Image (cartoon, rainbow, N blue to C red):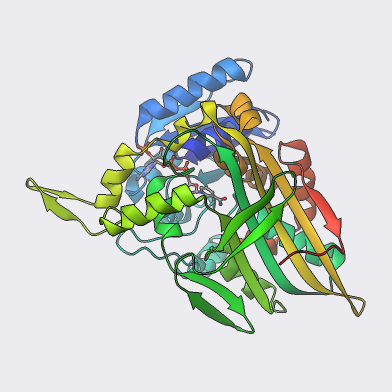
Length: 402
Ligand code: NDP
């Protein structure tokens, strides 16, 4: 099989996707990595050449905001699939380019307009008919969360429940990178996400909270109790739609006191702002300037220790009886760095992106139109997680502690 993939975005996640695809020559015959800054693509390509037995990947410069540039690159390289791991802002222009050229599309984060800190699936779901008519597939949100957490939910429903009633996605980063403040993925996207109001699903409607208003000390396997805050996360939107029996769906993420204190200061002094301000004759977006001075997520890996732990805690009914289920993965920052030169947050996003690409290219996942990951068969994906570096564990009928 000699499939061609075009990976767009040469950040932490793009690095992992490129590494993991390069490791599987049988599925990913020809790989091109394209991004705004070509020298980042070239650095990744030469690291892969060294670490993956002389495997060569192609590189290109691309501004994916410009649909015609992506169309031209697709026409030249002729990929079977475009893996978008640039920023959420590029989702729609890249989807447009795939539509124009008739090539399958996938990403790991839903579209967000630059000028409003707001993310939702509506913009991308609106492509359903056009993708279906063109006979191509768009796979949305195939990282860890969304992505693996969506597959975990589908797997639980398929094998263990007649009805899902309560879903808690619990996401801990119990790692330490030794910096006073840094974000684990793109700082601009990360800070926009964690400073917004909290939101969860209960009894058929969304309930809003102040940012970080609700918290709980959640016990994570092999890590112990960590303070976890209820935040809104994008997979909740598609999960409550695709599993309509859910009475409650929440997302929890750990933040250290130190991280939250820095975040409060950043907000209080206006550095989280996304409106441009005029400084010495130049328009500057404070959050983008902040990104330029913060540690780069892709450079945190070297001294990062500890684990991430992300999983789903589910309550529901099977054969008329209530049951519970917990499925999770713990990922080591040190091991992620040894294998791909980056930390576990990028690793846990890039590996599922590669697996999703494998599912499409091997025909295990197929369809015409726009799909969220939980709409597809979870079994082959769960099998690959075991083989590709993100093994999962499960427990049945335990006290979920939620
Ligand atoms: P980074 O900021 O490290 O990397 C983004 C890359 O995209 C950079 O190389 C950047 O180029 C490139 N890029 C930005 N704009 C353009 C453009 N117009 N054209 C071409 N390339 C562009 O981000 P991450 O690698 O941390 O994250 C990548 C994606 O993964 C994000 O969408 C993020 O939201 C998502 N994500 C998903 C998770 C999940 O579990 N589902 C978890 C973590 C992240 P340059 O280097 O020039 O700036």
